[in-house]
Length: 270
Image (cartoon, rainbow, N blue to C red; front, side, top):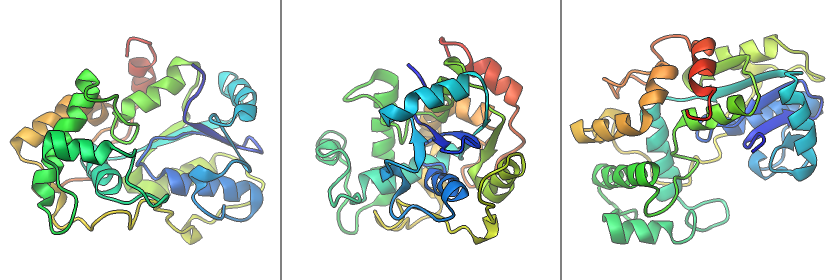
């Protein structure tokens, strides 16, 4: 299976396991800058050079060798499951993507037809989101009407493939304390180009794709919605230390225990 979703600087100063909707655009740009003294001109997900990616066939042997020998500092970044699934809804379901089309072609028409979701005009954001949440649960629990999408599948699943296939994380930090976490990563390694985190812009490539969220996070989650979120993301809340009981609290409740993460996500049964 290898190391899907894994990026590595060309200098091999660091290795990063991408978790969608968790500051991956900013992290990728920082990695690119740390080698080239400039940011990639465009969406870093579109870059086919200047950064090793598992999706680039020529990069795979280099990533495989590095990760299995733990030759470089390896890290990833996670996010509160409530804000992550909301972000996925507004970006991927309500938004127009950078190719000028709806995400995954017929996905939105399918959701409109089968789940009664609305995405046009002055629609009821809360009602449509809760219907989307049912769809997300169906894809993850039963893989119907389609396989789960990487943007709303559980973070633990993304994080685990790296461990199961022979990788070891040196750091997993929270998006909500990004500067502190990314600062720890950069402080632990040597890069060809020094990065001043305070001067790095936030590369939120999904911003502007969809409508603005019209309500506080907690308004989107009633008792049923919270139950569905817990059903989907139970391990994410527990392993990555987020508050399930209070959707209004996006901040982590504690430090991530790397030993616990490796132990619980390190078997193929996980």
